[in-house]
Amino acid sequence: MTTNISATGAAGVAGRARGRRRSFLMAPADNADLLRKQASSGADACIICIEDAVLPERKAEGRRIAAEALNSHAYGDKERFIRINGPDTEFWLDDLEYFTKHSPPTGFIITKVKTPEDVRVVARVLQTLEIRNNLPVGGILLSAYIETAEAMRNVYEIAAAHPRMANLHFGAEDYTHSIGATRTPQQLETLYAMSRVVSAARASGLEPINVMHIVVHDMEGLRASSEYSKQLGFTGRTCPTPRHIPVLHEVFSPSAEEVAYAKEVVAGYRDAQKRGAGVYMVGDGMIDGPMIWKAMRVLDRADVAY
Image (cartoon, rainbow, N blue to C red):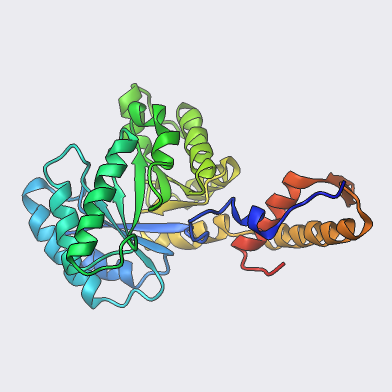
């Protein structure tokens, strides 16, 4: 029997996500200078944080400064996400109302998500605000930060909570605090959590995005931890500085060797179809369905037609 791998089936691994979110450059909503540098950076996406990065007494001013940046800076093709306050705070509704009215972003990132209902509540409010502000209904994406033990218990349901969902972000600092663990360079304390986030994201057609490397000048550590993240299945990371972007793009983009091998696998599949073969060889390795899916995913991420 011939292995039947359709283009539709291969695309299912990417789902609703764009597939090129390798870097998310984060900046505080109330820092106009950093927002300007963020907009002119080479990041795939920008995260404007109105949550922990902005003091409670600065929330309103932060929204105003961020909206002004969104409306005045040239972002090119960069996606623009607003990291809003958690649904258990007094600020999240004001965040949604202000930005949908004054500067609608690509999406909102919900922090401190604990249950799928947290996502659905935000989605319902967002739909009302889109209608009120004459925006396309469903046009604004949602993502969720998984950063507590309770969220980890519900992570699969959170990932599948609503069609607007695009990414799952892992928040290691809050997560390790919630379970009483200590952060280490080896990251063994977060291995289970990271693997669970990746699996839940993939199961729902979302992109799994890992936590930033907070030591700004440690480029060696950034590369090593990013390569580890990629091995686990993450497709990108947040970052605190534009200096990290080239490393993230290199690590989370398919290498020339990966692309060349993927082309061989797909070409072999075409030939195997003609011969009616279910499996075939590439070099010394036997190839079947899962390896073909992986090859197609590599070519998708490298923007290589097949």
